[in-house]
Image (cartoon, rainbow, N blue to C red; front, side, top):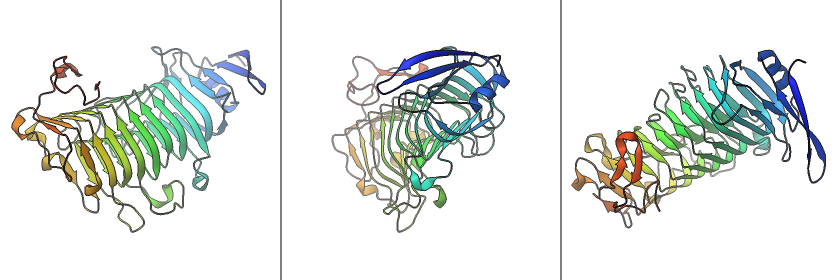
Length: 390
């Protein structure tokens, strides 16, 4: 082999395991390294570019010895050019992707799933980490996603940037039947694509926090959705069934989008301390796309301490779109601040239930919205709401 392998001994509580640091210098060496992955391996890439169209099955790191595929540094990502899917992992555990720039994937840029073993969810693919990735120009046609997860549990997507995903129903992050996940500190940039972040197919216990959604699709967050029967995890699932459950959306900044917050077939969630600025139609949608006796209606969502700033010319149905077969009376609204920039006296939204301690018509006094600085001036009267709340 012409590529360099550096060996370093790592001592753990129970055993001593050799960690291999593999440094491929070209496409052939990268392919060879990926074919022979073992627990504890780190593939340390240069800046590239590399060609990446890899399918990997049964990639097994463990709690003390994760498998890492990483670029040189935080500000020097390895560039990978894909014509299909850069990485498709089936039945993978304890894998980290870090400091990578992936571009051009016609399908999903990174796809991690359970290999179709839907009955044994959530124990098939676990502990997957995505950190400091730039994924752009995915698709453009079809439902191509930047990151696609199906049947994955215990995952983290952190400090990643996304732009231009599939224009026909594609997402920056599309998750079907996943659990115990975290999406934080990510940036979703303007461009093509329908939805920025979606969790459906029986997904539960998800935290989406401290992200910037900059006109990122018609629906910035789709908490729920519409999923074909065979794609739910676990499958079969016991009733009462749901598309998504226990989804927390916290301290995010949303600029634009038709509707930043969409709750679709959800069974419990919270949206708190978010800032929504100039949505094009609604702040919130409450929808039901799977109508069956064994599925719950969209229900039990708490909306609190959010800051919503809108224009009267782009504000429909009082700011909320409520579809049929939902349970809007189970949604609660508390201490949100609503401000119509062009008609402050018309700031009060039309809500399905009375709001407690809401604020209407008070200018939040942003520092500089034109430069996407939505922090509040020191003299703002709304310091306790929105993504910068103290």
